[in-house]
Image 1: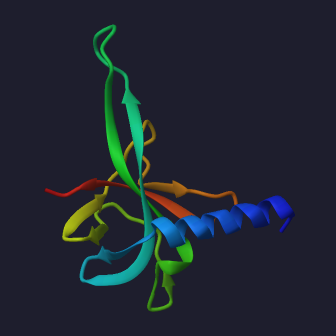
Image 2 (image 1 turned 120 degrees about the vertical axis):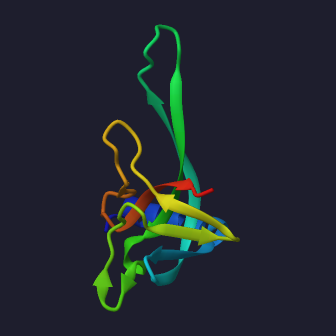
Image 3 (image 1 turned 90 degrees about the horizontal axis):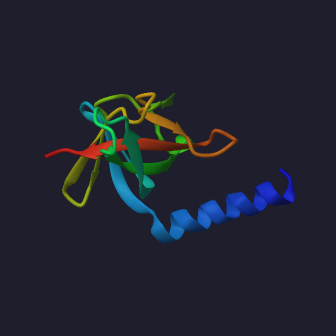
Length: 120
């Protein structure tokens, strides 16, 4: 790891310590407690009328991939998985032009950025 990568890793760790929330990540009846940092992504869509902007926004969760290990199995986020925090449930949903459920948040591919919508 070069000095720049080490500094970036230290900064990411500091962000998780300061802004991280303990959430419950669930798939069906199985769940795990993880630390996640809440964010968002604004998606712009093509509108049917000229001059009209249409968009959407997802609530994103930054989660270390290594923390999503259940019974020795590494989980990759799937549609319908849920993240619960403070009595509010967010469901993993596809967003953006490529209908992504998640993407890697770092070059080393160790952190997920998971796209969700609040379940009401």
